[in-house]
Amino acid sequence: MAKKRCITSVMARAKAEHPFRVIKLQFGHMKTRYRGLANSRAKLFTIFALANLFLLRRRLTA
Image (cartoon, rainbow, N blue to C red; front, side, top):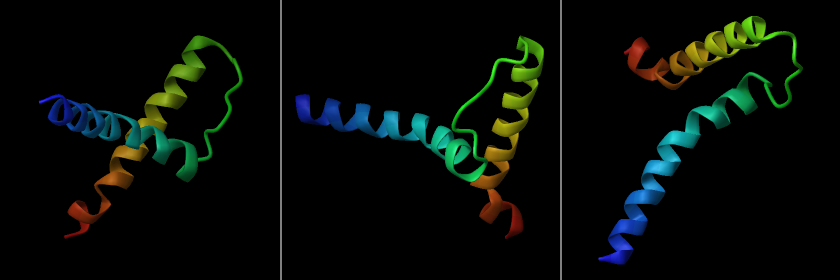
């Protein structure tokens, strides 16, 4: 029972952390500078939208 719960939590963590890996590696967003909350927020929303398109690129082209 405990092993099944551990596997479930590991799978959920992997799904949650995968978009952050894409953002860091594909879009080079390793470090950030503080340029105001509005600028940082707009940039992160754009990067997450691009990451979603990157992750779904095979489904979109099929």
